[in-house]
Image 1: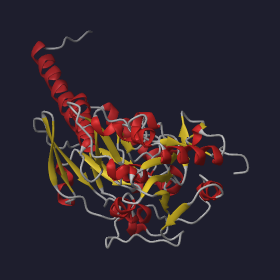
Image 2: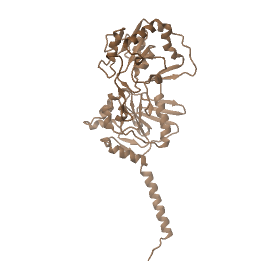
Image 3: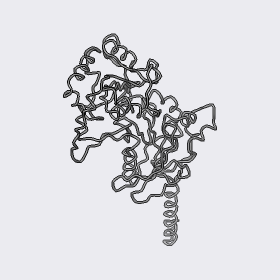
Length: 396
């Protein structure tokens, strides 16, 4: 004997199922979020870091908030609103804004981050937010070579959504400085003081260890052929300026010296430090040793690369030639007609980069995470090292 379903009862059943499905859709996070939770739970110790909320950070048209959760080189970033085209980027370090911040920044080279990675001190994990909103992006800022901070990042697993570093393959390019093209060429005729300087080569060094770039050996090779004045902890000279600022010191050196050794501590892909940009601020021609693609970072023809010379003597002979030929030396300053240098202290390009990426990714609902931040920092495409040893000048 077959039974028939009452049409009214069937309609009630279908309605009930539809309501349940709608409620389930609203309560359960989207598939990407479930995958993200699963990935996080499969990462050693990362389940101790935070709870992932299915709630969203409120969105307002073209207004985004960036929260510096950590300090930046142990300094709190000034609170400000940055215009980025038709977008406004609000920067804060006030942790009370966690639930309304679209991006949360963590600077890798900070005591808070090093302490937070400690396995021995569970209380230290309070340095990481205990809740994370579904549409909130956590961004790792790394401005130093990876070997100096990746060890304490291992315990964070897949904590971060984006990277903001000096590397060109980062989610957001975050350099120590940036040259901006002038809308119209400017005249630069004030060059007399540049050629009147009597001293040639200087460098400020505070790390006297045998760093991976072998820069101490490089300096020693140069000193066999030319005088190189070493300031700071590694030399016997000190800046005369009353300020302890390295920028002020380089401006002081720029009144006496024509060249500055911008020798990095490590030879790493795309890595250039503040040393390079500070040499320009001091109006000295930088002599570079590093892994940066310099023609993409600074104006071509404005620097001297040690890799262009097979021996230390070949480089010093060239410096002596420039010292006696003002016209050739002044060619290194022609960039001033077309560019202006903005250092990290006075440009907001990196913050605009974050907010512009938020404007694209937030509406699209992108929630990907970096599965292994240590591997990303140390290796290129999973196998090629990011850093390498210098092969310059026989015997060095």
